[in-house]
Amino acid sequence: MCLAVPSRIVEINDLLATVDVYGARKEISLLLLPEEAQIGDYVLVHAGFAIQKVDEVAANDALNLLKEIAETIGE
Image (tube, rainbow, N blue to C red; front, side, top):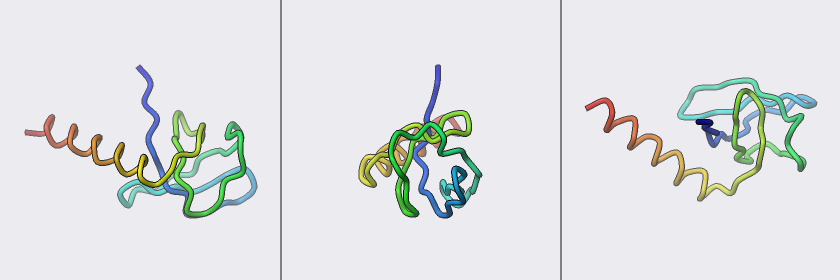
């Protein structure tokens, strides 16, 4: 099963971007993204590549769900 994590772009340098998820930052590739990304955009990240832009509401809904699942597993 594959999982793409919604992540907010905080820096862009050519086809590389730094994204933030709950304070964790990671460098990813924008090479596979079909549209131009901007700082502040949310993207789905899979295997180090942004694969799709998503709106902020959808991104936050997905992140909250992932957080709930992690908390439930941790109990």
